[in-house]
Length: 99
Picture 1 (tube, helix red, strand yellow):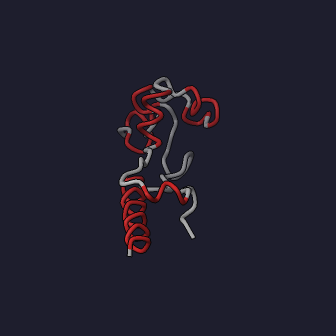
Picture 2 (cartoon, rainbow, N blue to C red):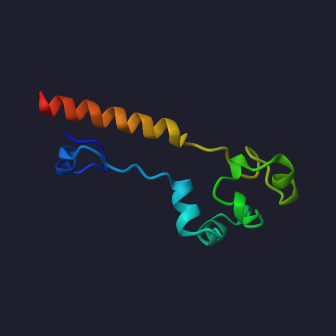
Picture 3 (tube, rainbow, N blue to C red):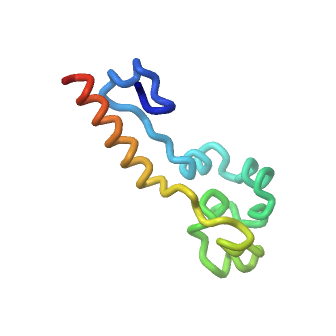
């Protein structure tokens, strides 16, 4: 049995990529068009904060009417922790298969 999203043949590779949605958004949608469309409550954020509203300074959020935890939720996933858990899970599976 493999974790969701990891095809069995990919487990044989030494490395695999774990994409960070914030960085992917910044690289491929720097103006935040997708977020502005699907999350209109964030639409007024400046481009530099659109992909990580939870890191925007309080005055910036206040100026555009965003109150984290009230008008827009706090992050559900800590991507750094999720990445680490994925890497540890991958390593565990790799060792079990090798062993």
